[in-house]
Length: 335
View (cartoon, rainbow, N blue to C red):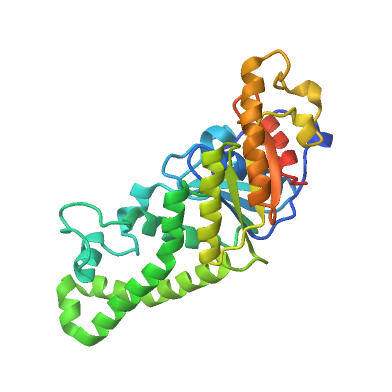
């Protein structure tokens, strides 16, 4: 699905990072509001500038990718730039559920499993996450894209997404086993042959789930990057997320500390005259906030010593559009 797009305003090419050193799949995770969308957009933009066909996709129900990239982002992958091969998609959980979490009718699935609410009472638990996984698998397998950058949902939703492949695999196996035991009677439960035939596709879906699990665990192909802000609660929550990712055997290389009250030129090779810097001398509020952040940064250095830690400064402006996303990419070392 291609959209009508307009070329961006002319930019200083010498200041623009081109290309990134990253595997095929880059996922950004963390609690809500820490800047995952900003990081994903900056990484995808820079990847595409290196002439790599790149898809940035958001699984966060509270999408902000369109605002960050300053363009309309469709709910299915569509090209959003004419000058570089940049594609984007915001997964709409409600639209994804139109075909059911497996591409099957949701009420049917809930009834057969026997562990959901009455089919008429609403969505089965986890259905939106299941649907998001189904679409994410499709996008990761799409031959149009050489790199996929994922802006994940907040921490709790992300962990459920990571738990789903094994759960869905088990559910698919149960359905297939039940169908084999009940034969024609099972087909009759669904009312027509089409629905019964759909269940046969669960085996293929199960195999795709296994490929997704293998992909997420392959450090040569996947990098899960954790984003946090320099506050004690955020550091602790990120530590817990890293522990859970380790349980899932998901490789993490990079921890991004966002909104640090430092001069941007201290973090990356950025022209200091282009950005407003915090005043730690005359501004009592800035000075106090910087002291709080320094405590959190010291704590994070001890906790995250085995990871590559990148700092992204707190910009005076809201981060959206190419100019500031280029600055973020420079701070991420995406060059």
